Amino acid sequence: MNFMEFVDELEELIETASQVPLTGKVMVDRTDVLGILSDLRNEVPNQIEEASKITKKRDSIIEDAKAESEKMIEYARAKSEEYINEDELVIKANQRADEILSNANAESLQIREGARDYADELLENTQVNLSEIIKMLNENRQELRG
Image (cartoon, rainbow, N blue to C red; front, side):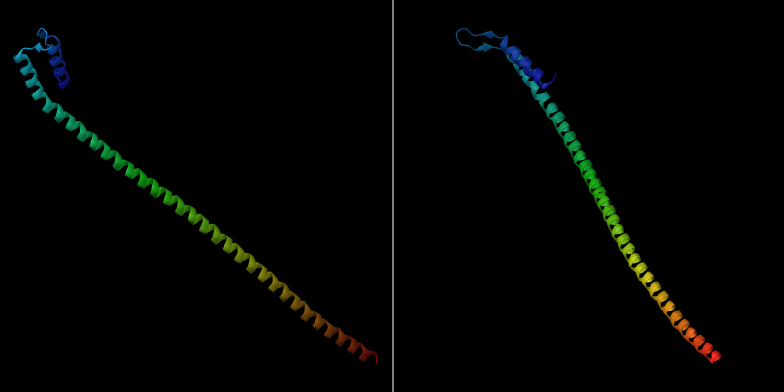
């Protein structure tokens, strides 16, 4: 029997006991009451021990749940930092790519301007040389005529 069954038995014993006339008191068999109380006394430590075991098990389950939740939180934190770092790497890579592209465009413009200036200088030198050759040809022709 468990604790509550003993209490129910004691209650039933009192409910069914004979009444002392004009007093509201009842007469119960002393041996029956003492037997139930003895059974209760023996059962209470078992019930307390069982409740203690249940409490310890509950506490263990709660501790395990807390530890597991801590692990999950730490994992989530690490993953979020990883994603943030990846995002930062992507941002830095994009910035570096923009910088390289900008430098390449500037260098390309510089090379084109340099090539144009060089071609203009060659054409100018060729024009000067051709002018001198034409002048010399004109002088030679005049000498021949003259």
